[in-house]
Image (tube, rainbow, N blue to C red; front, side, top):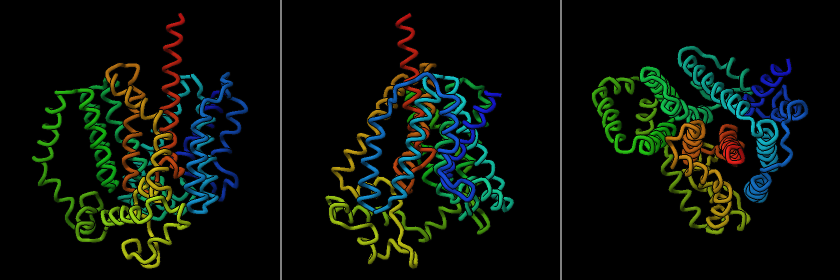
Length: 404
């Protein structure tokens, strides 16, 4: 019974954090806290030292400058700190050095993402807005999508899921038929998910992995993939025809007709950074102040961002301060990723490599949207702390072997 309770609480914690469920009509206190509290009370490991103190200090200072000083967004700051702290406490005290618990929580994470992807497939054929609203605890704003209010948030889910699926089948030595099936499933998720940024992130990460894992053989693999798409080009192009088509090709055709100005947004954002080189926080201005007369950032009465999380962070804090925080945030996890790719063929690194590929992809996706590590993005924060904790587990195993 106790093990069942542990699994249920872990699943519910992963569910609410993965789908960015924070406070709803059901949860009048932060949802992650609701499920973390009993986990800490009943299932805490013997770990007594909190090892994420430095990371939480960086999160606190970066959030302080970005949210409170820069935007006056106090709720946003506290939401970030609560969710980040919940992840730090979960991995530090509930997972600890227990590899079995780590695998369970990772399985739950990618499992609920698969469910979200399947719901997206259904949403293409049948209107399931009511079900989606029930699952996410809010009114959905865009369709077709999965367990998310918008297709952009769903894109972050697929950016995390699709590389993990493909890389895991290779590293865990699945047979070629199953690997091709999973690859096709990943492509279908991207194709019908309609997020070009996910396709770019997926291609970049898979290319990086193939180069690291197969080395010279990767050229042949790339050639085969390109040849396959070239042969099937005429069949693929038919999906971009007709207004009723809802896929990544059709969306690309519509954007080419001038319905979207994402490139212009980023270009203008760079110009704003040049006009305010020390960051908006040092000029006493907000984003709305500096773009209110610029038509590029308006859709009717609505002022929009540049859809580039990193540029927005740099805009508020300036290049110098923002780069300092970015280095502090990503230095440790970046070193782990670099070392993992240097030893990509070691079986003990397989799960870590899969997580690293997911984290790289979801981080690349942030170049084209607003969610990222400091935007209380559940999938991004999960992967960030999961990589850090799994690395600690591997280091502890190595020390145990040496001591023996």
